[in-house]
View 1: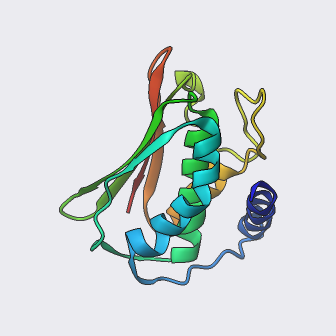
View 2: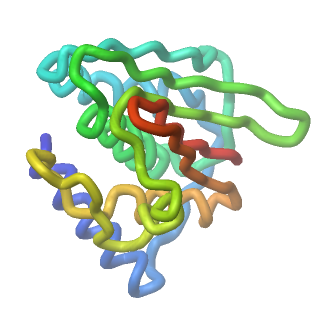
Length: 171
């Protein structure tokens, strides 16, 4: 799974950099078609990290999106939450409906990102705290580009010491 995710991220990065990433939007049952498949692939890492996951996304939410690309976004976000989270803690995947959009958030407990680096984590090949963590530095870069293509926004927040990192996605 790790190698497959790396290859996917390299291929998507190449398409993004050549301006060839295209959306195939359609109305999607978001939890069933995007979140659930990602969670299925995430359970081995969660088990290894002894982490729990709470997902509060309703079953009936429909989103006009490219489900394949959004699976990549949430796969990258949730994998980062597990890889950089403190073993034995939990990850929360939340949802709020707004008047004109849906807001998804993912939070974990971990070291956090220095406040002056929060925007940098969305740059290509950027990695912080890389000791004993596999990755390419492409996951959040790709997440931002895909969300931008959908007309959404993504941002990261971080607390101090033992903190709840939150990656937010708005569409």
